[in-house]
Length: 279
Length: 162
Image (cartoon, rainbow over all chains, first blue to last red):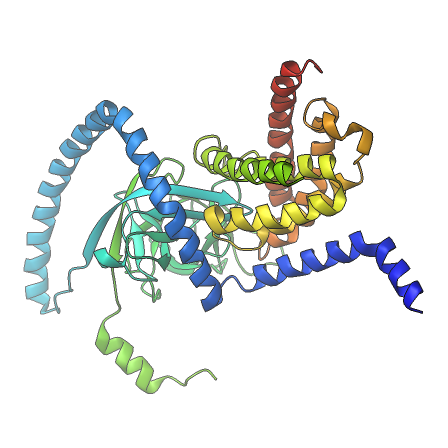
């Protein structure tokens, strides 16, 4: 009997090892959103972030001239934009006082450089050189001047890991500005996004702007996500098929802002008090 | 053997660093050549199926931990790659691994099936499987195979096999 078992194992050892290692890998994949696995991800993030920061410093030294020119152009653009925003702000304040609306709290923006990009198997993360020491927290939204980049999913003292909109696990509540329809932004194909759960009764056109929705608990409303590049309907499907061109160019993003956003405390308190808890 | 093992460890770490560099600078529409998997195929062709699978798991896990931060995915593809490439292992040809064009077509076959088996993980929640298949399975296989041919060309020329 023992001889038979040992013969079986010597013959099938490769298949047994294959099955064991494959099961172990699948187990790890299934526990990726687990708290303990997050701890491991942070250890990996810290280890590579210092290396990436060093490489980034060296590379940025060689591109200083072109970067300087880019920043000058951006500066000119921002001066113009600031003037327009100032005018809009004054107008907004006048209208608010007229309507006696409560003034919204200003969101703190933490500037950060993108020191690493990771894309593999539908996963798309960026690493920022700002961490808990700078005030970054898990679930903080990350933006650029163009629009929403993603959500912080892991933070170390000096670095943070951001799950971008292109990541297959990303889900952001979004709104079609023209149609006033809410939906869910998920990763699409070939660097695009897809907007799901939009009923076909809404009129959606190419070029319509998609921004974050008031329904989102993670991101403040009104941040641009992208524009509709294609909207189709299929027989038998109650939802539209909407492809969205992201506003942010994820392949060339070099700097971003982390928003210290939290929902109004009173609203959270009200929901916690009155909504039934999930068990 | 210890000396050879240290050599593989150094090569494995180098493959992870090169992979990180390629992810940042040579990625086309989120698809980049999988140097880490090429290294696993090389291991399997040099040392056999068992070593290839073990190496694939370890180097894949290290790669996930240090660069993708999505634990388990590369180790999953690595184990499958080591398993498939192990069938092409021939003790007498072990020294030729990575030096002849056999490496390029073995890599293409191995990559195609490894990425194909990983497709359900990548496409989880995605309705358009064909889209994901075209992009990640076929795209990665073609891009990495071209890269394997360049490696063979450079490596083989140096050792006069090409």
